Length: 233
Ligand SMILES: [Zn+2]
Image 1 (cartoon, protein in one colour):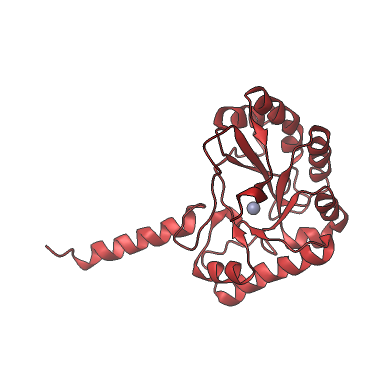
Image 2: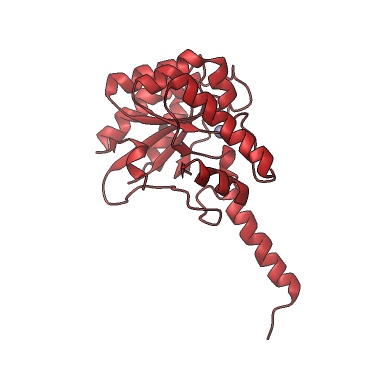
């Protein structure tokens, strides 16, 4: 029996929604959402910076504990806080593209997608002296135009394994720490926020305050943090 047309349309819509909203969906090109499950290795990633209140304390903690991380930056925030962005790059962390203005890209056409990705690429490259090679879509939302542009820029696209809603102002630093400890698993790409995608002055100090405990808990559980770039093909 042939399926009635509305079933096929529903399935296509479902697939489109999956590719759009699922951060690790392969539908619109591959996105890496987790590393190898074979050992106690994990990856720290920080989105939406740079940010004056949180990025620098996070960098200090990472340096003190010799932990590498990846920072997916918003181009307009880089323009606003160039010295902070430079410091991230100078400390050897991976610097990623997270669009120019933190636009949700799932309904964006090719022109807008190009503007968001290339705009951020140029600012990040000129400010930090390093052209980004990794991309993460705001909220993980992608569409086929995103795939075309990331491929042209030579990017590896990353999703994440879990987030802990650290951008929710009601979540304390202790709770952020507890959530990471509970969710940590082999190969996990941990999504945290050193900035606010829409507010360059957004307060992410609770995430910064949680970080020493996150690192201590992970190490106690036998985890080693490695650079996200080792997952690039
Ligand atoms: Zn974001």
